[in-house]
Amino acid sequence: MIKRPCGGKNPEESGTMSEKNLAFIGARGAGKSRISRKLGKLTGRTVLSTDTLISYEANGESIPSLVKREGWASFREREYNILKKVSLMNGIIIDCGGGILIEAPRENDPEQKETLSQRKIDILKSSATVIYVKRDIDWLIKKVAGDPSRPDLSDDYRALLLRRLPWYEDAADVILDMLELQTDQVLDMLIERFELKLS
Image (cartoon, rainbow, N blue to C red; front, side):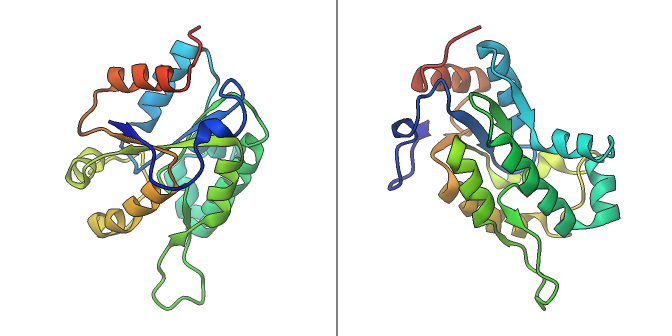
């Protein structure tokens, strides 16, 4: 089902939906890119992937290579700068990386734990309706296991997901529970809910 978390402003109340961006968030492998691409094709909206834009600005360097060379703190700052740029655009679909709501651990943090990035949430919400693509933890772990195109996050991906999933849900204006939905159903529901014009 599609639902809006209790509390918070209805996304349709701020700006017209023809101008409002749609930003898809969620864990890596949840299906954000697939939904974004298909929705973009149906509606003619431009689809921008934050990871692709970061790679482009790094002269085509892959995300895993970039993270290995610069570290997570630098990568998270690159994400923030990309969000500032795409937030200036209207009527686009933003395919966000899995860690888009995350700040890297501070150097002086003895536990070296990542934290929620309120500055990124604020930028996303300033121009976009934030849509969380929700998946079961076991499904996500199986989906991304051994994928060389994705940077290594940690030895305990389950613990990381348990920490992050509530952050996605709290930041979202709309939640897509993919346990109950197929991609084509999601597309039809999004088009109807946001009155998107087909190309």
